Amino acid sequence: MKMKLLKIGNNLTVMTDDGSIITTNNCTDELFQRVHSLYEQGDIESIKRLLVPELSNEEARFAAKKEMVATINDLASEYPSLFKVNGTALYRTGIELSIPEDLAIEYVQAYNAFKKQDFAFEGLEGFKAFKSLDNFWMWCALNPNPASREDLFRFLKHHGMPITSQGMFLAYRRVVSLNRTAAKDLIEFVSNSYVKVKTIWRMDPANYYVISKNGQYHIAPVLDGDAVGKLDKLYEELSNQEQQFTDNHTRSMDYRIGVEARIERHEGNQSNQVSCSRGLHVASKAYDYSGFGDTPILVVVNPMDVLAVPQGEDGKLRTSAFTPIAVLDDNDENSLLESSDFDGSDILLDHFADQVVMLKEMVAGSSVYELNVNHILGVSSSAAFSSIFHNLANAESVVKNRLNFIWEQEEADYNDYHGDEDDDYCDDCADGNHCEEHSF
Image (cartoon, rainbow, N blue to C red; front, side, top):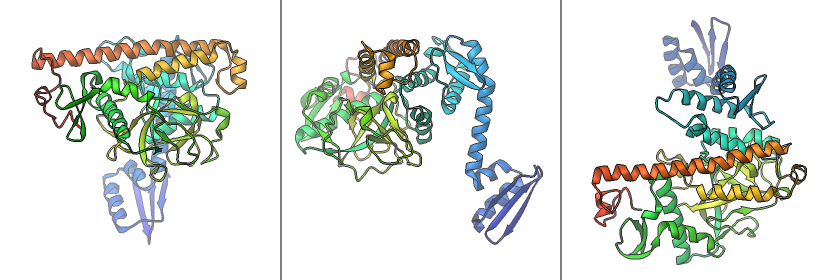
């Protein structure tokens, strides 16, 4: 494509032969040199990204939407038990709520990725990228706030916040520690270690001991020091501890690792036009939580419980419930979820099961009308709820089967390499040493 450049002072205008005009009034000499280099290459797309990134992003979004519209009919035709189309809107079968555009685009991309696989799967429903999205939408469809249903996936995508296989999402926040005792040090170490073993190392915490040695806690697959206990059992016991943390604002919340913190939905503000208001706040790495407590934690949130995704707020949202799952150290605050090694797919199996049970108990003995009036569910028929619950219940067994396969495969791979030794994972660990990879 032919172009013309016109620079007067700090004003730069790029004109193309199709009549498009791109301008900026803040053109430095350095920027002009970069634009001129791209101009000589005839690279108009790179010039757009450089001068008007929002325009380039919008064009990319339009291209993705165009691809989505072209593909959703194929998706619905191939999987009529899963999807249907009305105009350009995509619907999950049994749920009379149109899937938000950003999420529909992601469904299409997961479908396209599935078609490119050259090895066997259980089918589209068993494909990891698809299952995460599908579970997310099942929970999200139960959220009674239309704005939250529409805004949430876009927010998570924009901030790179991971959605697990169970359809939950992980976020950061800070809390106030109620004491600085040895018990708190153990809580912090156990919760942080447990999450790292499962999400970074992708190993089974049942294979590790927590050891006290020279006044410091360590984990290892063999005993080398004073044993505190097995990592998995110690983590399970954290929920039985007395109140561990609270909030900085009211000092009234009871936050404990592994225990859901919840307020009634009507106690929170569901308007996405209000930036800071009533509710439990969680955030992405973009939000500065440093002044909101002395302890950074990682939490899991059910999309069903999100109150509002405030417009104009950079990285923070309100929810009626979340579950703390780990205390983070200084190196992990605002960075753990972004690690290239992080995989939260299998960390929330018990939490997911608890959420499904809670949902079943919630609707027992109540009509869909009563649930809607009380702002509990956002579905309009019992058939829609049955469809959602059926899919979520099935997801539990799918995820557990996948987890069992992963652990069995890792054990088989290890034994293939090391023989049938009892001590797992690396020679240093097997010798009782603390190797760099598997100790912290």
